[in-house]
Image (tube, rainbow, N blue to C red):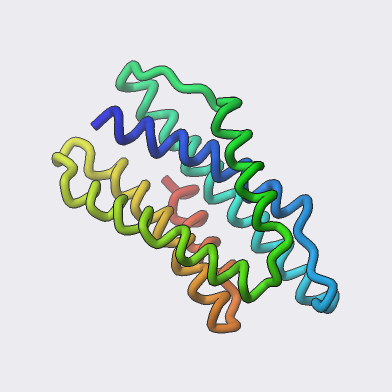
Length: 161
């Protein structure tokens, strides 16, 4: 179970880098100011979801004596490189791409939750719910709705712990 938790943690480091890159570099010349502001809020919420999840996973990793690196250069670089490849996509294509990118992870983390022993249920619930929030966020964006509310619900739930 520690290997899976550590793998998920590394994914958070990747995600922080990935979404930070978008926050810093994504622009859509066809978007109005209100839309751009909404997208900035979305990127910020995505980074917060990843950072909060990483913070909570660190507690579990420490308790289990598993070493981790919040500044894992390989994962940070990979996150930036992947984001760089997609930052040029128009919004609708980017959203579609991200849905397809997140979907297998959301499924995998749900399977991990199903396989988790009782003493690991809470941490795997966190891992699964964070990915589900991201997936549902992109689904909402694809429907023309804001995904920020879904992310903020996750943030509120896990900040209150």
